[in-house]
Image (cartoon, rainbow, N blue to C red; front, side):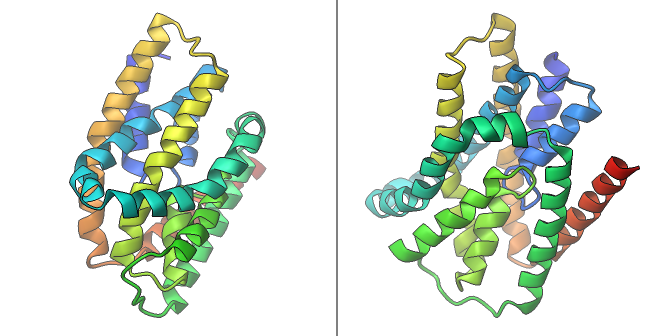
Length: 253
């Protein structure tokens, strides 16, 4: 793996992290396209560079967070709890078995795309503007689905919120903010599990990936917010379905 690979993967992470198309799947597919082996370091790289995208959320939302810190802290803590518990116990299984499994990713992309499409077609206009403790916990449960590569953390939380009757702008923003504790925990756990035992070159690659993910996520978040003000997620659903079917055809070819 070299600097160019780190930049490309960082761009993919920043572009896809907050879209309902699965950053994990796109990172792994990009890795395969670049002919990079699925080593422990690259698996850690794909997890850790998500921190760059999360920093973009913090930069864009820190004023709003601290203006009502107690409320956001309570809601995000409640929503984060399910993933924290399940992720702690399932970490090794996810990293060793699920990440890099093309069949799992293909099916997740396909099924997730169909679910998003159905929700967008049949779901009634949402009216709930504020998230309470009860709905925060339910959103946290939806987020746990994203531990399966190809599901999409953003897709699971946003679609879950829409089915609960939460307004699109509200759940998208909450999904962004929920990424902060979730990805911080995922990065921290991976660093601890790896004992911070990266070479100087690997730390350099991580830094490049983080910076690239941060810069690209800043742009994508703003564009995505402008997009959802006028559109739904059907095009994302169709993209997921097409990508999932393509992967299945390649696997079974």
